Amino acid sequence: MSSIKPQKTHKIIEQKIEFLVPGMELARDACTSDGKILASESTIISKALIKNLQNWDIDKVSIIAEITANPITDPNIQKFMNSYNQSVTTVQKTFEDIRQTQEVPIETFTNTADDIVENISATGNAIDQLYNLPQCDDYTFRHSVNVSAIAALIATWLKFPPESVSAIALAGLLHDVGKSQLPTEILNKSHRLAPKDYELYKTHTTLGYDLVSKIPNMAQSVLSGILDHHEREDGNGYPNKLTSEDIHPYAKIIAVADLFDESLTINCDTPGALSPYSSLDKLRQDIYSIDAKTCITFTENMMNFLSGNLVALTNGEQARVVFVNKDKPSNSIVQQSDGNVIDLSETADLCIHYIIR
Image (cartoon, rainbow, N blue to C red; front, side, top):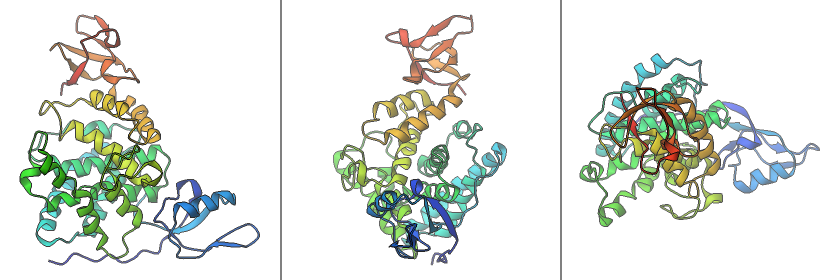
């Protein structure tokens, strides 16, 4: 079965220098105020070029949009949730097709990413709704959709322009596409992998990059988001042990979305129990290895979704969250049904375990 080959888009947009990322393509010559050409049309933007443009105090340049996408629309949570299951089903089917054909139907993924970006809300409670759905047996496909949605939200909170948000959503949707080439028994293991299996598992980043790079005219920024999402700021990631300055900005966003969702779904200690509180704790603990700006932006915005939840405490009792501890969300202030208020930050052995749904 042959995948549909996308036509290269020629939508030209004005991009502020602060939102340029390596891999974008100049649509017109980038010139100084006196007409000197710094980079010609069709140049692929690099870190060095971005720095040069900044040194010349150039505010913005014309680039070719990375993918054709619609901008974020007004919040509509119901519409998003109605399309969510369809997105998961689509990803599942395409992963199965890719396993057989080694071809990525990019038009299907692009349309799905567009749908996610169109319907998710940066100000509503869509991110909370992601985790109020019935549990499914295989989280691989839901995880891909969740990461796409969360990455789109983070990019929006970071003030990326709509075209970049859509590219980040696509990279998030494709970030684990390489897993389609791995043995299913490795993907379905619920516990820590043996060293040999883990080394095989880690190849999913390069496998995904190789699959998607076969697509004509695929933006390098999207490819880098796929390849680099397990790289870490301190150089302890994979596959290339890159450090902060060499990790693509899109991959830094996807890394945060991936870590947050993975701790809730794939690696959840208690199947079916979700605790964004402890997941945010883990992100804070890992801030030295992930992009600090992205992590802080995400965790601070997530505070809007955490107050008011009915939760189970680690002693088995129930309480409602009345004030979120920004430094350690699992140690927030809660109120029990008898009116008793507990500041969990002042208790040594008690914290929020999971949300009661």
